[in-house]
Image 1 (tube, helix red, strand yellow):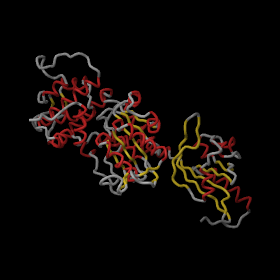
Image 2 (cartoon, helix red, strand yellow):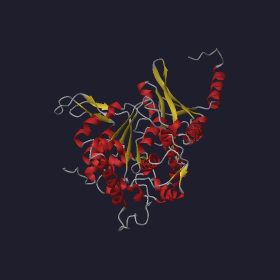
Image 3 (cartoon, rainbow, N blue to C red):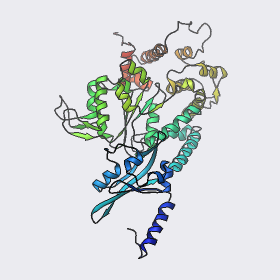
Image 4 (cartoon, rainbow, N blue to C red):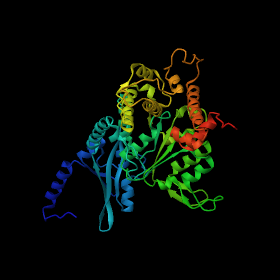
Length: 483
């Protein structure tokens, strides 16, 4: 508690006013009736409002909200409890919310709350410096894959941060900046991108860049979990709810104040989407078979590998769920639209496998480089790494320039690297999705044949979980031979 010497009250008041005006933190105070009585210059700069225009007004007039809704100052005045370390927008200027980091405290006199004040911090410069440092680190680490390798689980369930994202294109740099800005908010986020573009890398990076990075990050692939199990896994169960059910918390509870990542949300049945929407709206969850509600404190980050508007039109995604999760959205461009990233990632993967295989490859041949630039990369970054790995493994230790001669036949055909007699004949034009499915079917069949249709071995080779492989086989009409 501060100690004051006896002094002239008028002089002391004048000094305190000067101090409030000179500090760099924003100060705003309201009295017991909700009128603004202090609004310093630092707060003006943070919220881009003019103190002379709002001082003396009720909070709802100053900030333009419905007077029937209680303000945070009114809640603190009523409860007598402080609200600390929040990051929200109270002021909106030209339709743009102004987010500030702040804490709000009640003023208690003789046991009665007579006012409320907030201290807001200007973290804009700090965020800017942090983003610059991350960008420099990202570029530096992209040159040395050994240093760039993610550390196994730093304690919150993640392996990646923005430093692990490789790419030189303007699209990638802008996407990282956008993701860093929304990472400081508590809102739900939707990430849209084709398979293999790195949606979970961005989700983990957002979590690690945010205020609650020490809280858990829990991810689940909605396509890999059968519908009858998904509800219990997400919401939890009560013993006796169904045969074999136990008292068990769901992922919404396990995530606590952290992040719950729902990958491939477009694979979630519509009936399950309805239940998810209710949880997101009410911010509380009810275990299967239970009657008690548990508050939901985590942020939900969803990912889709298809255009959400297309999914809504096809009836595969509830429109109201999209509005609930898509307020903040990130769209990751496919690799074919980022040629600079293809070259950057190629260099990175060559160095990565040089370290792993003790080889000394320096670059691609001109023919192979042109093939890479002209290829559509339906599997995106994951497919590019797969191709580089195949090239590196099938070349000798003395190779300096990678050629396409040692690639498997299906990869040579895909990259159009065979001789004229080897190249497939031009086929009739097909929709992109059909061509992607055909390519994916060919890769899976090739892997299944090499592993004698052993599902576990094939899934390990393809780098996916067993349930995902079974789901893809069913979708693509691939059946295990009877003999």
